[in-house]
Picture: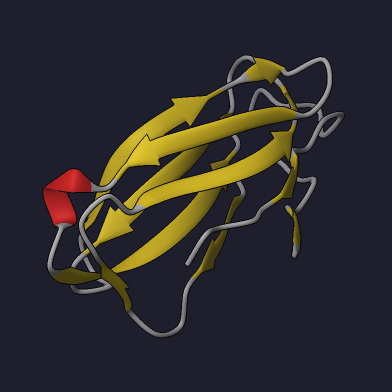
Length: 108
């Protein structure tokens, strides 16, 4: 699946799982991503037990210079069901030049 954010200032774009995903022992969250993000803006990888309050497991900004494979342990969520969210936020300083493009694959 592909995720393309908005290209505006003061924007929040996100993509979340609709249904919770059961985390078994040894389950990781992995995906490929490419991004070009202004230094005032950030992309976040987040996890939630209730789809309301999210834990940030990573954030990034800048330019990836190609596809990057990212993987995160979900050990803290073993034997639970979680929601996964990818979120991108921009600040008013952004001139709307850059946006992240994320290609996501998971083993789930």
